[in-house]
Length: 257
Image (cartoon, rainbow, N blue to C red; front, side):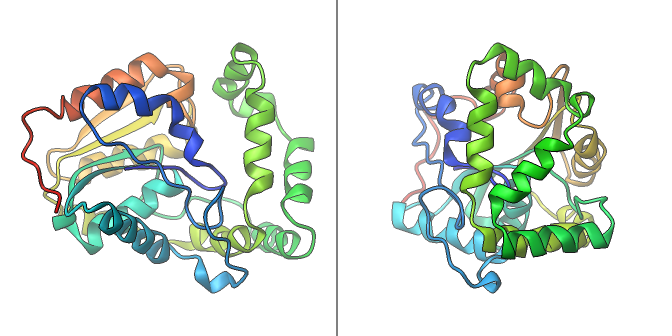
């Protein structure tokens, strides 16, 4: 199961379905609630890490999966951590990608409050317009490189953000900004784990290393030239690391109902 991040979509992993299927895997990449084609509750209380994790387990139940491999990207990686801590016996192998074990925002509380208020009163279009106006190309060179290499990538990224639920944005922005560290809990995990991060994803390199150091036996891979989305920005190295960690599905014990 491949889980996208904040204001992402299932299509963040569309290019990976066939390569993983070729290894013998049944691959599912859902839209989290408030994103894409999933339900979009208006009540902000419907959006929490625990609610997202519950949705993943409900989907696994519907698929007949007693156990499954789980990859979470960015906010999806935070959701994946909550999921594996809630039910470690249901997760075979865990992949945490460009994520953190703690709060993600370094913005001042008043800026977070402004973002919440804008989401509630003006919607995601206004927020994306504001963020675009103040964008610094030097902040994410990997993103700007992939925009130049893949025609339409910038516009697609823009549409993803604009399509997210305003209630989800308003709810999760402060939750992600105040989340306590999960390192001590992660240190008790026994699940085989791969931690991956783009070397240019400055906000997440340090937390990713800390996660890998905390989880017993975890593998850690850093992608030169990769930013926050190394599946696009460092595709070959990213795919090689993921496939090397998972291996072919053939010969694995079947654990579905």
